Image (cartoon, rainbow, N blue to C red; front, side, top):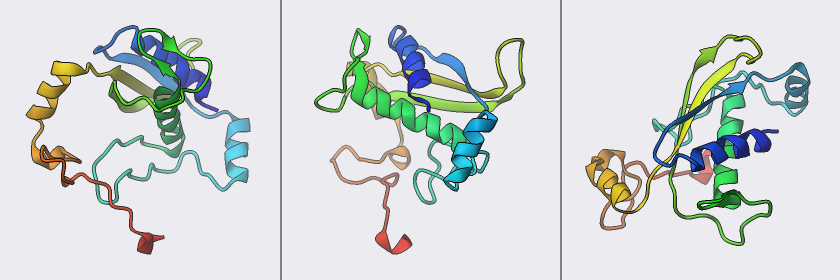
Length: 162
């Protein structure tokens, strides 16, 4: 459902690396709500945290979490550095070019723009700029420490929770 919109937003972000690119995740249509409901998904339900007990990205709703997943998937498998989006899936996942995502407040209809949640994304710069940013992060915000061991933000999904 979200792949086309995710690709469009990512293509805009690839043209402006290091800058925030804004858009809106439109509210689901009645048809989309029905499709999700048939599968037991309450699209307006709260977003489940990415990391149990963590404070990672809050996508606000399950609908926006679906869009966030589409962004990450398209970025990982269909991005072409310096060229935008590929028409065919990459043979190996993209390892460079950090994607930053922020989900904002719900916005009302504005002319032809439908109501939905504000979103902004950024393709973070790599190389030395990335290394300086990582160095500034306190250990409490890292999933991996400098010595390559697990940090406090490491995800730990235990089978006993299933």
